Image (cartoon, rainbow, N blue to C red):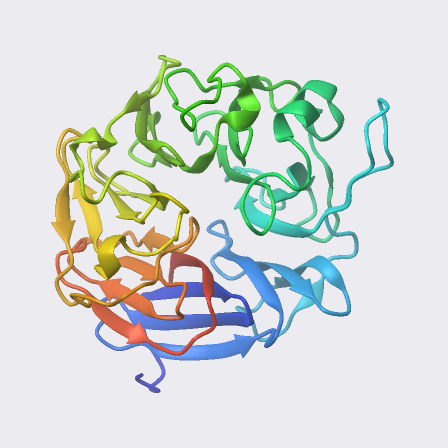
Length: 382
């Protein structure tokens, strides 16, 4: 790591792990990285996000031994932190439904550009929350947390991923702040056209595990949904049952992962989109066979890229281990920067941080021996 003070425009990687958070900073050449951390050593950090509206405010979704699930805020890039006065929490039981408590906040999303203090959060078990004061106070948002139909689709608190069901992939249409998407594992993809007053499922074309009914929203398990920065009418999705693309105004997802090699398959967690080309996307497949070992297929990790909207896929593994690498990448732990030559980054379940300066063709490990990595976000400063 380069310990010199960086000047000019910087790329910063926000790394959230099972035992704290780290910031890795480099100039736009991305040849040398300076590390800042750990922050919150020993605490679970599920997501760490830099506010793109001011370039200096950080929000961290944390689970701490003595405070439980909470949100921390920093207005000076992590030099000092403040805990939320009122973190996300479910209200009292209503509609005859069982009471719930937030196990952890899983996903953080800044609001629209013209509402500088607005943030959204998704929790485990599935809940949707909003803050209107920069993350200091959070309240349930929309009707879904206590709507009987949505609670049925969410399943029980024992359902979902090994560490609990989650609401994630909160997306605000950059053209219309009243147009909102979110996804639930399990419980499908959902859309609002009225600023969250109501949501409707958006699952047509999505497959479910063999033997289950596609008309039952509970069985739909989107792992990650992304909206194209260059074309907000196109979304991509990495699902428990494949890779998909949706071109609006259609409401039907197309499975575009069929072109992946049969021995690899199209199962995984993260989905990353090119910031300026809506035909280009990257995924990180995992072994989804039999007992779902959640490892790289065959112990041979690779990123796969499409440059034609999913018609064809190409393997990129130069610099990665060729064998006996049994890690994988979680849904929030892969991202892209916005440099002229796109940089890609991912963190592994074995605590390695990898970077590519050429859109995934060549890879370099820039950090080892971190705790299990839960999320990686890239941002620009300066």
